[in-house]
Length: 206
Image (cartoon, rainbow, N blue to C red; front, side):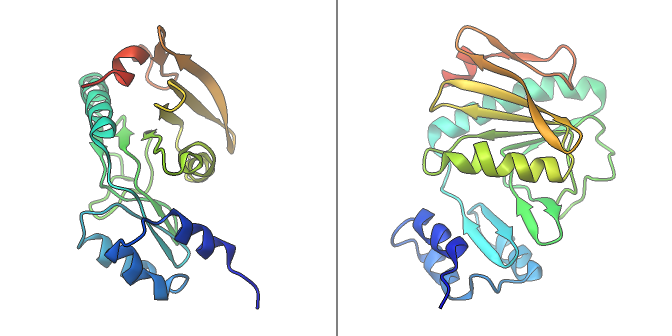
């Protein structure tokens, strides 16, 4: 019998003994989109969904949250003057029918953008992910493909593991590097002209 490698990989990423994870196990590959939406409405855990599979993301650490808070206030102070909005996880983003992600930050330049929906957003202008140490490739390799698919113009990857902030911009159907910003530098946005943040301040947030 063929081995479902997607399910194996999901199982390896789960925390041993996590009751929510174990309760999802028997239906992996068979969860409907409606069931996922209902389940994610009833838990404080971050859940992402792809074609019948639900992945339970690790709880954010204190470090993750203070970085997220600093970036939220920085983006919000800039974008509100433009009539835009910034929101933060948990908030579902539909990549396509059958696939949902939960970016750490989601930004729209127009707060009345029709992609902004109550149950989940249908897109964004810019998203930010803070790399999790449990599975860094989720944020650095998998999510760029998803966010390009949904047409998000700019993707920021804040990586405490490498002490960098990578800014990707959408060129056609794929992302290209606008910059990989290191300590001592300011990470800059191409989409939001004039917006920048100190990499040191982000990584050393308290």
